[in-house]
Image (cartoon, rainbow, N blue to C red; front, side):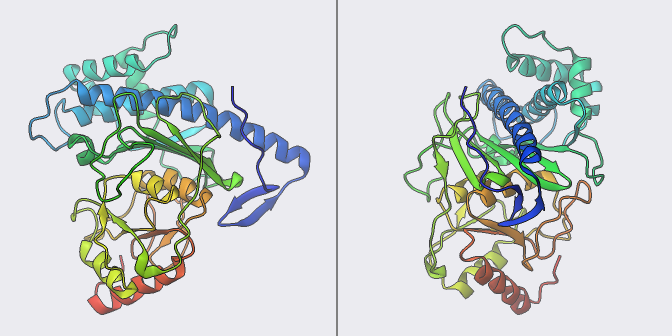
Amino acid sequence: MHARPPARFMGLVWHGEIETPFDSDEWVRIDLVMDALIRVAVDVVSRACAVSRRVQLGFQFGNQLSKNDASPVTVADFAVQALVLYELKSAFPEHVFIAEESAEPLRNDPVLAKYVLDAVNSGRKAGHALLSVSDICGAIDLGLHVGGDLKDTWVLDPIDGTKGFMRKQQYCIALGFLRNGIPSLGVLGCPNLPERLENTATYEARAEVEGGSIFHAVVADHVAYMQSASVPEPLYNTPVRVCEEKEAMMAVFMESVEAAHSSHGISAQVASLLGVSQPPVRMDSQVKYGSLSRGDATIFLRFPRGGYVENIWDHAAGVVVLSAAGGHVSDGTGAPLDFSKGRKLNNQMGIVATNGVLHDAVVEAVRLAFEESGTRAQ
């Protein structure tokens, strides 16, 4: 068993500021609680990574790229959510959960339910009882909590990066924990992301079957860690840190693969205003947050189209990991993301994630890009 290093600050830390002071006895109690949370979270995300990869490898893909029928991504979505929420509820019965999926499709489709059940049970620990369809449906529906009540809340995106999953490229199992509405712990399971990436221009690179990466962090520790996705307990021997690039023109940009998910045009305007000449690195999912946290890139921009409102599960875990690694995340105006209002984020002008040093310059470039384009802030 590996001991988590002691937290560096006597309080919950957010963007480098101590928000709530505690006496030493209270801090020890909170630190022990976070240690228990991170151990369970890394364990179940590691097993969920293995489940998702088995589902990927066990199906014929064809050209199907949608979430319907018993497609691999559908099975993986339900299986990961069922496994993760069942295990978390067993460990922390007083906690509540916000996640993407509802179990209604499984109740209406016995074939799909059987696929999902087999996948979930493949991720159970040896010696633990196998689950039933009723068990997994109940676990999935734990994630229907509306939020906004400041309870201790787990936030899960079971398969973040649907099309990346289907292309056998990058996707993420993203698990965050909110305390008083503030993201306090994050785990990013990245089954196809190698622990070492030689070339950021080729994010089609995939880990071996038993490889992949997990990033994990407790925000109060001000340090994030990376380890093999096949290790079912948190390790603390590989801390990661954002790159220290101070020149905007040398920045490496990241954005979503699909233009439908984020305006590539606005991102290109921001890059031009900053003097960046390198083409953007395009990648699916919150793997981008993990990549920024270990210095693969410098800036991640996301500008959803058509009045789309972000879900909290699309960012909660990633915000923790990147912030703990020294980065900064805000909306396009520079305001912090507010995870305390329920299942949605009420951010303005997209999402800006950086190495921290360049954050103010990027936010200013975002403002100018929106002004120049005449695009209304979302």
